[in-house]
Length: 464
Image (cartoon, rainbow, N blue to C red; front, side):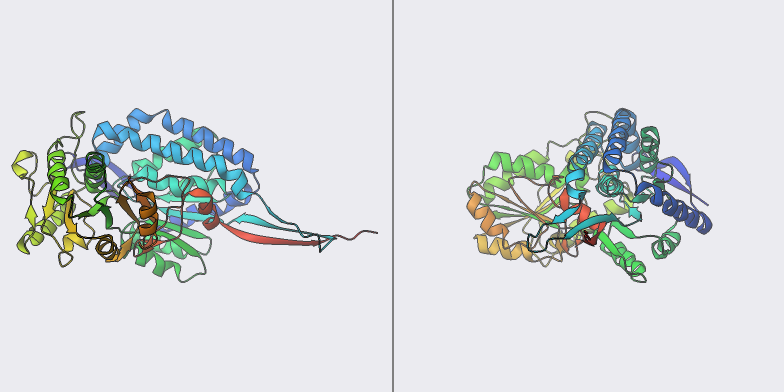
């Protein structure tokens, strides 16, 4: 059985991959378990050394990886290399903190002489990572590198839209000299992935994708006593206060809304602007949005490529149409973007005003190049609206007042709270979601806690 990857840039077949049978899936897991028994004994210093060589080998092929990425999911070539750089940044940070984060925790107590007590962070075993297509390398590295540094083995199931990305990781690990089968890739239909999750040797599942997909992952894993890491949907808000630097704020929020055609896990999807600066903000935002160049993503001048598939673009177009029927006002003349065509994944950016929370455009994940902007009269109103969501991945505030930013941030139900920036993952900070944005944690020193288990050593020392 095989799967054909259709490139969104021209709607033509780009690659064909063979899908694993049930027997092959089982064999992959069994190999992972055997490799785990070897890899977990490898000193952390050696694990770091191998991962360092992996990153060197990966970055060395940056240009060809970037073009291949563009052909698989449509991001303009001028930006595609940034994902390779970001992957290296995250991996290198996790390498830099691995020894300190994974070392034994010694318990010192002078009241109990004759004992040695410590807690060891044991690796879990074979870990199944199921990655999404929108940032296939960045999403994968969040789990793959920390898991391997912690002494686990990894089976990576990449999205069927970006399967070649998994092979790039495999090639780089092979070049780095990683023990065979510590890292494996798996292309398989959903039915077989469900069986893999239920396999007794899979110790943890990390999934990035839709809320519906997360529920299926959780359901499959519930037959065993294992944890899952789930990064799911988002409807990330921004609040522009009256004291914001408008030129800077507009520049950042336009990029946060439309980069990668809005197909970012933490893209800005709704903006609330204080009434004192609302008109100025909207005018500047619209003018900046008009500067995008929608077109063929392999041309360097293109700044907005196609969405991943026509179906995704039509979903966003329907959201916009329904909002307009309910009274929303579109501010972008689509004719400014001649490449925008219905029944294709090429879609112009759109800015909507006169929106409210009765419209799906302000409550339902769009994952596309559209933004709704609402006027608010106070911090309190902004807080209420930002929290009026089933999601909670990131949220941002744009202000010169740090104290106000922290105070308001304490009231927002979100995994990450930004001041004067957005749409960015700092590997030193815990990447988490609340509500329907998921559970678990990746990156930072806390990410290792989800890839290990504490094992207590209680030693009574006998002396003659």
